[in-house]
Image (cartoon, rainbow, N blue to C red; front, side):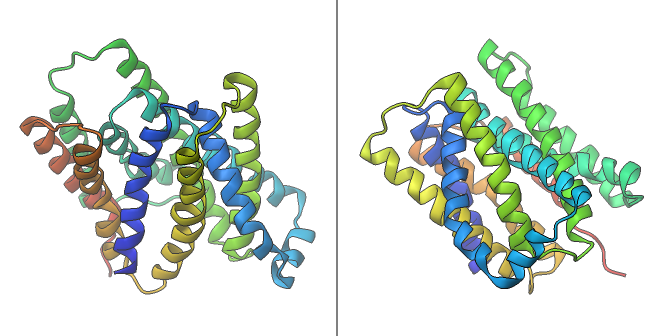
Length: 285
């Protein structure tokens, strides 16, 4: 139940972001959200264990942390906000599901992790679902730009997934150490870039409350609870639960944003969801 609650909170983020984008430029918005979330998590970094790990961080590991912060926050989250300013929420969610496909391919090259036949089948099924969703291809200019931006974000997310796995599988650092350092680096870079390029608008009370909710509940709280649930969930269970976000976002976008889904798009989403599930679920020996 807790895992489903987390995915629901993350799904509502897409709706809240879309509403806030009418007032706040995307990069500035993303920077504000994650900088505030970083400040919420920062006091927990003063625990003795975390302080010791940060103090003894070597140059090589610090370099990895900096790169992960830039990839996962500055690029991945920044492009998501830009993508949501140009595309329907469902389209952004669907494009983000390319990540496990690309990660599987990158895992072969960088981590010597050979995908199973089922995962290759899932990749083909996912691409087929994408083609059905977008067919016939007749996109306006802003949606073409949005897809291009999201392509950069998906690649950044994929690289960050591989790099994050490389950092965490060594068990050298507490997950909070990794989160605080990488979020702090990536969010500040994103916020400064957003302010320099897009400015810092006056915020209405509604969007201030939205920002606080996104940072405290949908980011700091939700990520903490998700990591807690991963102690008990199997790979299959977490993949299925996480995959429900695509459907949740579609329903929420229809209710709150008026983003209708055609029958063809619904079929494409279902096929893509099945393909992503095949890729993410690892068979136990």
